[in-house]
Image (cartoon, rainbow, N blue to C red):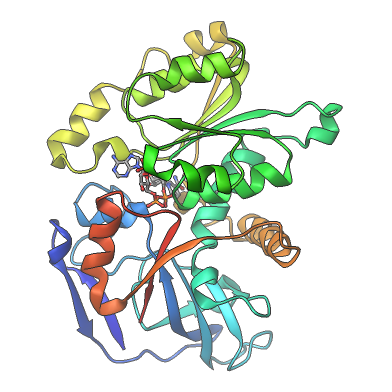
Length: 344
Ligand SMILES: NC(=O)c1ccc[n+]([C@@H]2O[C@H](COP(=O)([O-])OP(=O)(O)OC[C@H]3O[C@@H](n4cnc5c(N)ncnc54)[C@H](OP(=O)(O)O)[C@@H]3O)[C@@H](O)[C@H]2O)c1
């Protein structure tokens, strides 16, 4: 099999394709022939040496795959050779083959391409956890037709695309921030408002659009002082979900420290939150690894949405595994719109 290794912390060129013996599934395990691996922003940070959750380098990262079952181990009854599947992998996903526990894989719905299957797990589970499980989003029909207002930063990315789909399922009013060149995509995906967050004017713009009230929920993976601005656009009783730290990218360890020093620690204190009637919530999907049953339930719900045509993952580009360097550069340079996938 072929795998892509992060050989050491550094630029995309530290990625290296290496051969290894194809593993054999043990009892309760399956061997997946990977046809698509999702790339996540966390992988970029891991390669830069800025992701605390990453395995020690050198390592093979990758949180999700889609493919076909090539072999099943002893005692596996619910999945068979040849089944089309998708799965969360806590690392090791940049590969042509991977052994997983049988309960880790989900049947890929009929007709779903592998690249689409690899675009769902991380992005859609994160958006689901942030908006529905923790963010308190409720259907407009439950609220006598009143639409909740949700602001999503990085609206053109993988999680941003997933959030737009879920926002429409729940009938919310969607505000999406992105680089200006991506606003057509953001609107096409169903955001009611596309906003440029590359300058500070976005705070006033959101307040204007909401008649000064602000929004009910903000999804913010940027971090640093961006979190302070997100609190500025939160209505009373609103929630801020923090789930990433993109502000740290590109500047090395010093950049990370600089961004960390700008986090509004005092505004996040219990007393400040009590007085503002705000909630700040954290989401880290990777840290729910032990809660297999719960996360599997969310996944089954998302796959039902897909079958009903309610979610539409957008695969921007598929790069061959041997071109992972270009794929990482593409994301790091902020060129992607939606999901970027590797094909072994
Ligand atoms: N906590 C969790 O469980 C979890 C799970 C998944 C993702 N995340 C986080 O959510 C965020 C989005 O993930 P994703 O997979 O949707 O990302 P993605 O698809 O790779 O989207 C990346 C987009 O983020 C925007 N961006 C904002 N600031 C950036 C910066 N400093 N450098 C580069 N791009 C920047 C860019 O869009 P514009 O050009 O429009 O700004 C870029 O195209 C990341 O921070 C990621 O770490 C967290």
